Length: 472
Image (cartoon, rainbow, N blue to C red; front, top):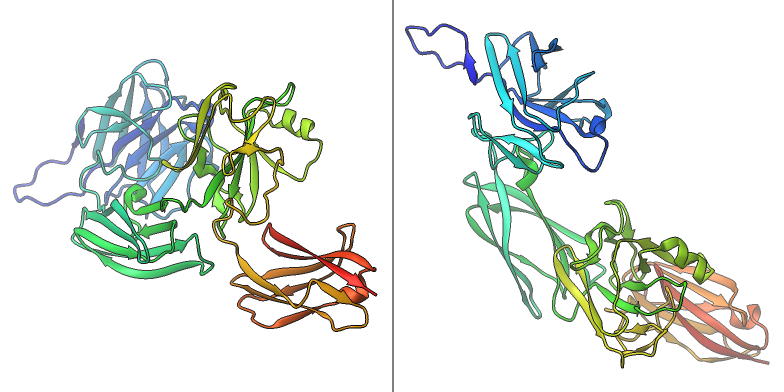
């Protein structure tokens, strides 16, 4: 029960709300209890000299009252406390939150006392107070911030995206809703995954049911961000929008029936111009995360996904291919299907039967034929969403006594132009800036011997190699 011990005055004077327990996380499952446990206390505008917290009538923990924060988190590890002016942290010390029984907690500060009984926990679930009652709900934790679904009287402006409709030649028509406030400014960001223009940002004003337009050639990454408030969980939208036939990632090889001891593996290719977060890619309905939030799949990069990365690496025998490990389950040898998801959106899929390919072998779903080229993509073809440059050669045959070889490239990104000898080793290179329209001389006659050599043009890991002939 939460109550103030101050005597009632004859004339009503509004008092600051008393501090109160709002959230407990007694039984984390992804880390050790000592690392993940926390107790959260809401202060609002109340001020006093100290906070006293006790568990099951044990000796209380004493904390100086924070002067600027409106919320306190009690943790075992101070490094787990986010650096925010609105949040202060204290240490639980020898206190261990019971994870198999109910517990009694008491909070005292100034003339205020809050006494609560916490039910027996559920693994991996936080206990969130329902309003200012003595009821508790099992929820996902909202460490250090307000939970707008349960807490009352918080300043909370939230945004959601209700629909996104693709219109060929125009882009995406977005419909959303702003709740908890009459209106708000927001930062609206659009990344057209089929263009090299980068993120486009503009400030917009939102109110009630709103509409926005995201100009893009096809699939896009959009973000809408409101100014921060007490409940940041609904302050933003971060969404991939996938236009039909224009997926930024594709399944380019599936090895569902390899020979022993090679493990099953799948090749996924980023055919867009931008790095995509690996943690947001997965096989729909199976497997776990492919990486941490900071990990990404670079533009025009391939990754092999398997349940045994060490075994696959040993089988392949070379290291210049990226491999990630996940619990992807078993791929049926006779017939089956696989779908690729970006967030919760299915962006590509493939199916096979015993007639698709003869085991043991893998196949390329884009061409529906056998293939075994781990980490390698055919130049051009169906796997490319859009090639990042166009080029012209003055000639495919160069004479030592004639004019020089000249190359013209049109690219919205910086391009690396190289000359390779007959063995594939680089003998000359030059970086060409974006939006270049001039011709560039390549010293093929001087750097290559008589015979065949190659011109290589690359943006990121996307490369096109063209053979030329040098004559006497």
